[in-house]
Length: 229
Image 1 (cartoon, rainbow, N blue to C red):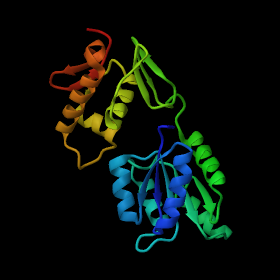
Image 2: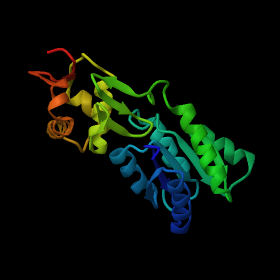
Image 3: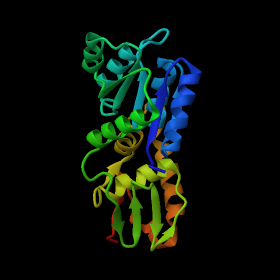
């Protein structure tokens, strides 16, 4: 698996299914939404790596949703590819001005879609964020979405993976629960601070005796990742 999640937003189920099949064959994980409201909720809750967004939908259009996502600091950095039957130049300009990172006109081939998707992800992924991180035998590889302990695979859930990746790339600094919510959950207002504690416990359990001490509780503040005692 690529470890990347793509949200497909289109009011026509057959189109969503066709795109999902193509992307899953290319090892992407797919989420689906049939309207802007469902899409926005999934963006906030699931934090997809990229959004494939249909221009024409009942109610809120894809262009309006793209503008909303780009105005919100929590979702502004999520890349968006507009999908539409509109091929006129002014429509393309309007989509790009709304914040879309690319524009694909229907009909398109699955091969073209996957190639354009990969290109956008390469452009929008911060340098170094895909590099493996190794701390004392604990290895996290974002590209393959795997965590190993001295070569042995560890079973870690998606939220714990994001939490561990943040910790391992931001070592030796204490973070409050609110800061962790903003960085890992994306400022999701529906998540309470105590949720952080639950996932910290799960992460420590998954890391086992060899590495659980790396996640340290800082009294009166929150948590930090440190190799120091």
